[in-house]
Amino acid sequence: MDEIDERIVEIMTADARTSFRKIAKELERSPDTIINRFQRLKDSGDIRGSTVVVEPRKIGYEGMAAFHIDVSTSGECKTDSTSILKTLIRMPNIIIAKDRWRPRLPRNRRHPRLRPPHEAQQGDSRYPRYQKHTNRSMGRWRRDMP
Amino acid sequence: MKFDETDVRIIRNLQRDARTNFADIAAGCGVSVDTIIKRFQRLRRNGVVRGTTILLDPRHFGLGCPASLEISVEPVRTPLVVEQLRRQPGVVFCTPSVGEQNVFAVVVLEGMNELNTLIEKIKALPDVRDVKTSIWVEDILLCPENFELEGLRGVAA
Image (cartoon, rainbow over all chains, first blue to last red):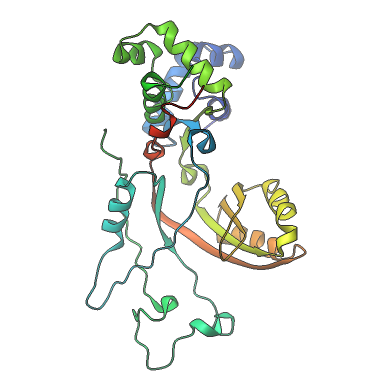
């Protein structure tokens, strides 16, 4: 990425609908150059797409929330987080879903209430902190077109 | 004047690709390009549409460490802490929240060292009690089009 690419990204971040002609004029390059650069940025995955920013309050939503979901990876109810993510992102009003990696706290900083007794096994549902997490890789996944 | 099916269609199209030609949207709706342009301007004027933007892959820009932070703050100091965080480079989203923690923030940083530095900085702010961190791994699934827009229909423009 050079300075031209950076400027294109900057301009389009502020307004994705800026015409290539206008960007070209501003950067003193030909519109073709800008079109080629934009295509290259998309092909390389630097730019994953573009979207419209909707104000949730204006369409009847009062709040947003983040949920943390513990996935049990052992025992009877074994599941994998990838399939859970795929199910979640298909649900209406779920805008973002991701695996996470939670840093393990040093022993003395764990909340005493959540510290499992010695006999507890990993995956013991009574002790959420003791759940094992998996982080699996997956391809980019887009919701099916409605 | 109310929002109707055409408004919803404009937003749906632009959610998938903000650069969609207005002519294509017009053809899909069976109305003129002028109508689409006017409707889009109205959506912007009313604040339903705040703008358009491109979606970048932070990892391609040397930012390999996206994370969310949940911060416990003395309740009276919440607005101040949110304000301070919003000015902090690397913080892309910050909001007061209801729940166990009262501030939620999303940060995108170069790596673990930078994240650690930022967390220490936040912890050093007056009245910040605790910072919980989760680092996002692998691909982030993002579906801006999952917003249900049905509520918009019938809302006065």
